[in-house]
Amino acid sequence: MSPSAARLRASPLFWPLPPAFVLVPAGLILAMTLAGTWDQFGWRALDWVYLCAQVGAQARLPVVVAAGAAALVAGRFTRRSLVFAQPWQPRADRDVPLRHAAVVVGWCLGAYLAGMLPLTFVTAAQGSGTPDAVAVAGALTGFVALTLLGYLCGVLARGLLAVPVAVGTVFLLTSLVFVSDSWTALSLQLPFDPFLGRREAAALGPYRLGFFLLLTVAVAWTVAWLLRAPRRFSAVHGAAVAAVAVTVVLPHLHPFPLVVRAPGPAVCEEHGGVRYCVHEGHAEELAAITALAAPVFDAYGLTDALPRQVRDQSLARGDEEVFDGPARGVLWLPVHPGWDPYQQVPAFAAEWLAPDVLRCGSEGVVSLDRNAEPQERRAAVVHGLKAWLASQAFGGGAHGDTLFADAAPDRVRAWIRQDRERLASCEVDPEELPWRT
Image 1 (cartoon, rainbow, N blue to C red):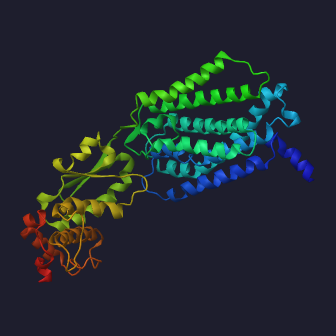
Image 2: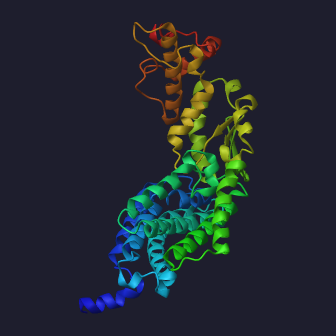
Image 3: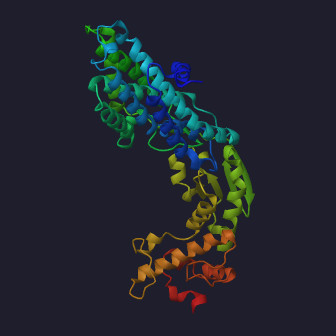
């Protein structure tokens, strides 16, 4: 097939744009999306709540590329020096910008969705939770609206200057969510990653979707108005722009709640007098939690110091319940996508049993140097005990802490029973440890 025939056959996918104007940004968006999600394919505890939030979060930089591509197209193909882009031509009113936008949005959004497919398949295989269609629709509509905003920048600037203007504008708009929670209803994403046991507040998703739909209509209408000759004032166009302005202001006057708790059924088992419970969507994590926490509790040796329950935070009905956990004998574990139980479970169990280092009065400083303050040396004992307890989840053995490196489990348990009160008040010096005397 000749090069000219190949161009003719491919042209319906790109017309009226040169293929490079959309293939390059689409390829970059696909690469960015795959790079941003690649390390999550092997994560534990993936769920649909997290994935639906990622549709907006992962779009933050790809939409900047799409907006830059749209600005380049508008700046290159709507300037008045082109014979086919004169303002008096009827097709310059609506047909040409509509075709430009359809090609750029189609390729860029298609590349982004293709990049999100592998993570979607991985999440579907685990099957925890249910998809949030409103959150996904809001994020994808936002992608379209911000890409069209880049096209508007190109129409206004009519040159290569439009590209950095569009890139900077869209990047700023997608970053405001990290400045103030009030911008969340107007942004692609939440300022944090929700997961199973939480969901977006009921009003947040529909408001975001409505805002981006309004923005899409207002921007498209403004582009057509700027390219029309003569420009006639339209009350409907003015109302659309005013509606966008109002929807931008409202969340700042009355901020939306971002997420609400949505605890589900629990899956539980009991071991050593401690009840372990996780959200049913995290049922596969229950065995690992029990196997890693039980040896730490056994190594401490005092059953009255153990929590009554170890619970998945996805089961909490509110933040107050988590904060009041120690008072109620409940150890809450943050089971979330990407968590590492082999690091977190032993550490949380050891934190529950050993006193807080800050209780030593050393402001968290731990030191065994000869010139160290007594509080810092006593804090080293507490820190060493936590490290030793956590190591029991893996059978103990040698580790980097010299205070407990040669300590036998039975001897440590006997010392804890003997000096429990002094240990709790951080009054034990390193020289008092019985295996070091």
